[in-house]
Image (tube, rainbow, N blue to C red):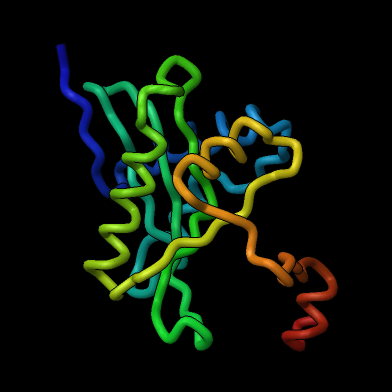
Length: 160
């Protein structure tokens, strides 16, 4: 039986990462606009916008995590923002989600001195919320996630 490995995503792995992220979008009932071209543009090159790890057993992708560096002046340290975490339905409950988050945290600590992790969880994902609760993640009192995209972002950056 092949052992489970967790390793960084390279350019040749982008189709595997894309498949995992598409499965996550399907699981959430979410739209999925990022294909291999977008992943390559954002994740490869001298200043990647994200890092990603794959959990593999042989050639089977069992999980994936995508994360990015962040810095908090109130914490006085760098951290990582986990934007995506997916574990295959056949593997859920076996501890792989925790292993992927731990590997992402260790990589963030090694590469940019990360000392904390943050993420967003959908209100419509109570199973995910329970999982994060068991790890000790908690809502940040007095904060909410805000976003600006599309025409608003274009106007802000002077591209409109």
